[in-house]
Image (cartoon, rainbow, N blue to C red):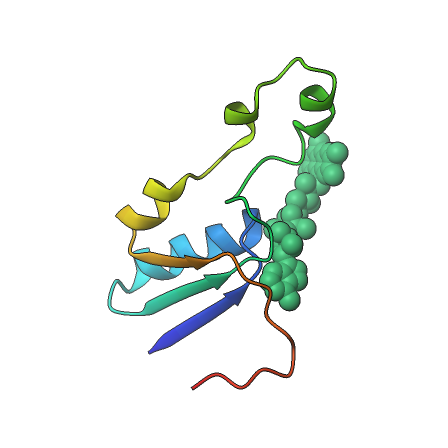
Length: 84
Ligand SMILES: Cc1cc2nc3c(=O)[nH]c(=O)nc-3n(C[C@H](O)[C@H](O)[C@H](O)COP(=O)(O)OP(=O)(O)OC[C@H]3O[C@@H](n4cnc5c(N)ncnc54)[C@H](O)[C@@H]3O)c2cc1C
């Protein structure tokens, strides 16, 4: 089974994590249109004010996805794209 998730922030990344924990055999692939992995929107105001560094915004880095065997594509996906 293959699961494709649109959006790689907190909802998409946590969904992918839970799916893999429930069944490691499931192939999980995230399409996230941003050039970043999962980061905290909550900390954005502090980041913009210079009180938080960019690294501190990131909740999941590339290694987080690799270790869980979750493929992360930094690509937008259109709603009418056919997946095979
Ligand atoms: C400044 C700020 C402060 C906040 N503070 C709080 C707080 O204190 N407490 C709280 O509970 N919540 C807070 N929130 C809200 C919280 O950040 C959101 O509820 C949370 O980010 C929602 O996560 P999500 O993964 O559902 O959606 P999002 O974070 O919006 O992520 C969706 C992702 O999907 C991507 N995407 C969309 N369409 C496509 C597509 N077709 N193809 C590929 N990728 C796509 C988007 O680019 C985005 O990266 C705050 C938000 C902001 C902006």
